Image (tube, rainbow, N blue to C red; front, side, top):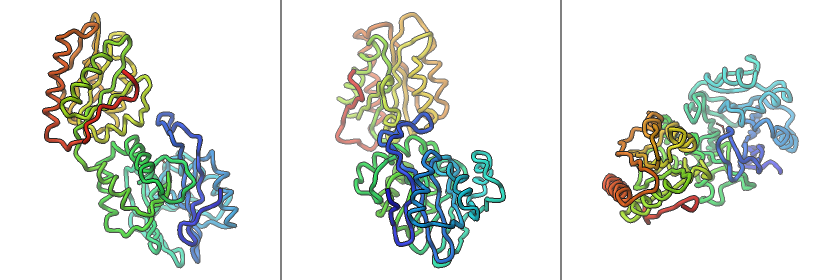
Length: 405
Ligand code: FEO
């Protein structure tokens, strides 16, 4: 790969990780990812904006060598996480005059995570500008996207916002700019759902901070550069502020088919009453897809058999994840099958303190569902559909499932 030119003197010099399939040992990356780093060559100073994951340092160095870079004055660390800062120690070793510029909170993170020497780090303040000669950088603190130290860097003359994780999406590809908006939308929403959703309130403030800044390009540190930035800014705003939609999620595990029968019945009943339903089989589901569904859904139904006196461990994991992501859900309930007892409902209820939801009466049945059980599920569907009445319609109404039930 060769470095790509955004505008003369501003280059994309990062790395594409085609084969990475898991991030944080948790998040699936169906489309790989990129670790974008950018080089600004100005009349007096040369600046590297963010670096790359340390496994791909050599790609970064190859790009810098191709551009004939002999000296770097500053390395901007918009965010301390290792996929962007992990190559800083190697960059500082290769360019001994370089200083790291970062937010006040980022400095100790870089020292703790990467053992960067304090003397190589220079803090920048929110709103501070730095002249590079014929170009000027402005540093804007945007905390909690998705760590407390995050900031963005704005190149004033070219109106380029280097946003790091903000407006990013895990997507490997050779296109410098966005060419397929639907693909980028999917990757960006997945990314927002997986790590940004718990910080909606902070991110809304960060979006407000950027709204009066003229931006021609958003250059994130994952995925392609946005040359029509309004596209991605509009979607982030909507994910952060929109009300939940007329969507019910059913996450389920079934050991011998009883819970699956309940799920199937409830899904069909809800679909028949105009509620969009998304069903996730937790033995095979892509957690990223579940997280994406949680961005918009109003209701979650956790469906689990009772095993070892409590909910199935897969149901526990999904419930813990939903609680941690703090989606805007309004309603929740628990359904499932058991035979002789257990603490399924109590255990699951205790796992969702972050969800500000109205909890509908759980439906736990013995063994295979009987007519009275199906009638209870119909009643539950009535309640959910009625509660969803005032919500934005998710048309056309669909029932989707990531595996056959
Ligand atoms: Fe892409 Fe928060 O690191």
